[in-house]
Image (cartoon, rainbow, N blue to C red; front, top):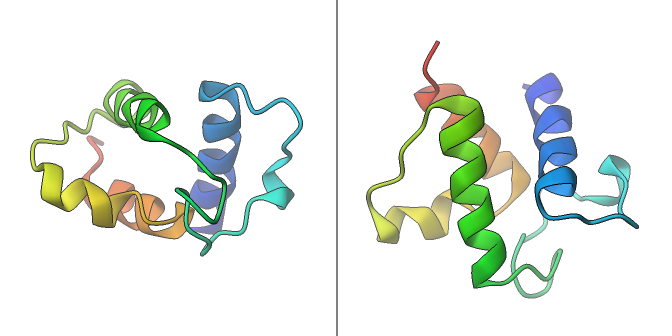
Amino acid sequence: MEELILKLKQQIIEALNLEEVKPEDIDTDAPLFVDGLGLDSIDALELVILLEREYGIRLEDPKANKEIFKSVRTMAEFIDKNRQK
């Protein structure tokens, strides 16, 4: 799981062009939106595209998305359970 978390942090940085951020700067359990990384709704769309492109995961339930994108850890757990092998 730690390997997936690190990879996911790197992918988030790349997908969102967070040039000043390093993977170790991102707290695995901190909120991705508002107080944590301070991401917004446009960033959320980029993360949805990332999951579809990199892991073959389609997100269909907007209510579930809020929980999935709570933190890097919740994203990694969701990916681990749902990715296309």
